[in-house]
Length: 341
Length: 148
Length: 118
Image 1 (cartoon, each protein chain N blue to C red):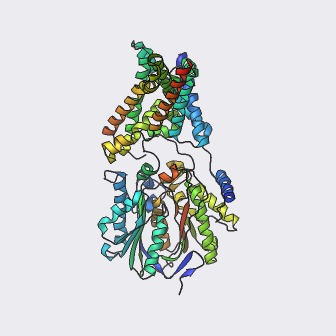
Image 2: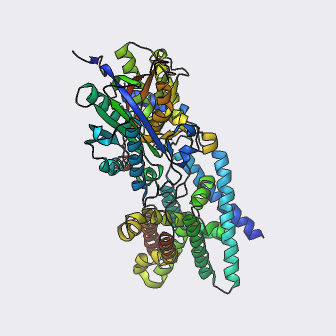
Image 3: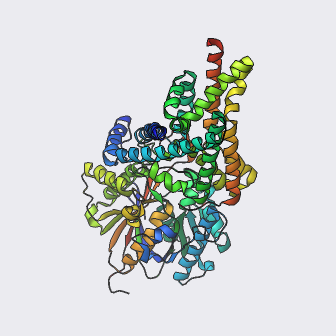
C-alpha cells in the first residue's frame, strides 16, 4: 500500500502523535509578543558559557531534556534524535545532544530544519522504525551574525528588508501512540532558485520555495487554503509573506488572514527594531512549540499547515556572487478533538 | 515552479515592489549631522594640538590617533554599534569607522585565540582599505615620478 | 568659529555621499571604505583634495578620503626625496601612525572587552 499521494506528499496511515513540545529562547524573544508562551527564557545570551557557539549548544541541551521530560519519558526511551542548526558542520546541535546518548541523525535544512526534522522523524515512526523520536532545531543571533555577517560590535545599518535571527531551540517528541496533535501528511519541498542575491532580503529569497510548496500541496491533496485553520510559514517576514500571497494569487489560490508567518508573530518591529521579522532555525521551531502546539492540543486549531522555510546559502557562496536558493517543508498537523482531553 | 530567466526577472520586479525602501532622506540627514559632528570634534582637537606647539602634520596625526582611541573605547563598551545603527555612513566614513572595523573583529574573534583569532581576523573588514589604499598610492607615486 | 562650520559642512556632505551609496547600491560598508580611500588618494594625487582640505580642514581629513589624501601626499613627498623608491615607501609611511594606532587600540580593546549581544 503506497502512502504517497500526488507528487510530493505522503499520508501517514495512523498519523504520528506529537507527545510534547518544548521551547527555550534568549532575552530579545522574551521581550516579544510571544513571551508568555515560552517554557524557558534565558536572560544571558551567553547562557553562562564562554562562546556564542557553546551557548547555542546549551540552549539545545536544556530544551531537548525538557521536551523528553514533558513527554514523561527518559532519554533512553528515545530511539532517535534528529536536529540541526546554522553553525558550520552543525556543531550547535551535535555538541548540544552529545550527552543525551541517543542515536543521532544531524540535519541541515538551513532555517527549514524544524520542518525537515519533523518530517523525517514522523516517517521513521510511521514506518515502524521507532517508537519515540526527538526532533528539533536551534539558532543563536550572535553566533549566526558572527558566521554569516559581521562581527557584532561593527556599526552597520540594517535595511528594512532584513530579518533578525531568533535565539533559542524548539523540540518535539514524536510517538506512535499517545495523546496529542497528529502529523497526518508531509509535503517535501524542492529547491527553488529565483536568482535573489540580496542577503539582506531573505524573505524574498525563500518566498518562491514556500509558494511552490503550497501549490504542490494543494494539487496533491485537492485542498485549498480555506481548508486550514492556520497556515504558518517559517521565517519569511513581512516582505516574504506578501510575496507568497502574490505568487499564489497568480495560481488562483487566495491566501487570506488564516495565513501567517512565524517571523511576523515572534517579534514586534515597532518596539523591537527587528525590521521585516524573525528568522533562523529557531524562529519556526520555537513559535510552533510555544504558540501553535498548545492551541492544537486544546483543539482551538483543528488543522494547520506548518511550513518552515530555509535559505540555502553560505558566506562563501554569497561572496562568490551565487544566488540564494530557497527550500520549504510542509506538515499537516491535526489538533486534538475539543473536550477529548 | 517556473525558474527561467524571464520568470526570474518578473519575480525581481515583484520583490522590488514588495520591499520597503530605506528611508533615504532621514538616513542622509542623520549621516550629515553625525558625520559633521565627528569632523567638528576633529577640528577642535586639531586646534587644541596646534595650540600646543605641534606642527600641522604632527597635529593631524595626533587627531587621528585620538579619534581612533575614542572609537576603540566606544566599540569596546558596545556603544559604537548602537551609534552606527542610528548614524549609518555618518559613523562609517570617518576614521572612527575605520577604527571600529579593526576593533570589532579583534574583540569578536578573540574566542578563537589571540593568534589565529584576534590577530589573524583583525583586518577582515579593514584589510582591503590598506591593500587598495597602498596600491593606489603606488599608482599616484608612479605617475607623479614621471610627470613632475 | 568659521572653520568649525566649514568642517561640519564638508564632513557632513562626504558622509551623505556615503549614505546615498549604501542605500542606493546596497554596497557593504567595507566596500565604501575601500572606495573612499582610493578616491581620496587619486584626488590627492591630482591636487584636488588639497583644495578641499584647505577649505574644510578636519571636515576633509577625518573622513576616510582624508586617509587616502595623506597616502597620496606621503608618496609624492617621498618621491621628491628618494626618487623611484619613494613609490614603495611613501604611502605606508604616511599611513603608519593611523594603522599602528588602530592595531594598538584594537589589541587593547580585545584584551579588556568581551563580545556583547546587540
